[in-house]
Image (cartoon, rainbow, N blue to C red; front, side):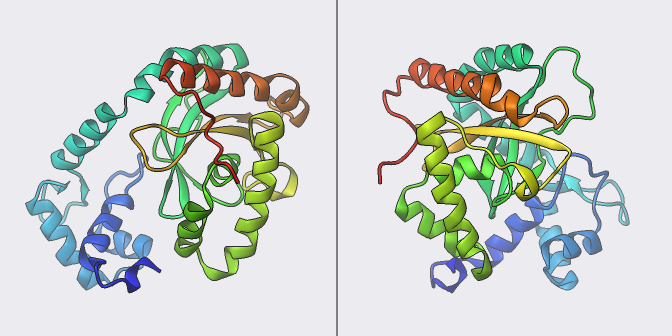
Length: 262
């Protein structure tokens, strides 16, 4: 595990865990909330939130008010977003795909062993209740996770395995093999049936490896199971997503697929 390395700064890792605990739907979090979400003792959380407030990464209006992400966190996020040019280039391509397929199109990244939704494109007239930025999906039971692990090199897979609980090792191996086969045969990966983490939502995903990142991201298409059946995935939406990501690769000057050779 990374925390067994002498170079690993545990206090820094805990502070970042506090920032990661916040979700878009939160109306502020208290020290107890943060302790429960992160597993960090409440006394330690109190010291970390004090420090993060002093640095501007958290804020709270009054002494007993709950914490919210502060201006420093917003500035850091905006700087990071501006650094990834592929998202801006992808916007016209993915918005067109969202409108044509009437599905939610988005980008998810691996974050602490889960897939974090970081950008979405909604079809015109879509309901506001659809998932949005900040939502986290399980790594091993989501199509985004499948596309991500299927695109990893053997070395990257080994590093990911070190982040996950030991009892998930076999599941990671199975998903990796299945996803690689799907990506090579179809250009997209998907998790269907009882293995899918949310039975009410169906999705598929295709990996893309940005030059700015050291690892792939997953472009996904999702909708309710009624609107996006397995048959529709294979007949039209899956191939359309694969073509859209190929178009993005050409637009960004990438002449190679995201899937690593094995």
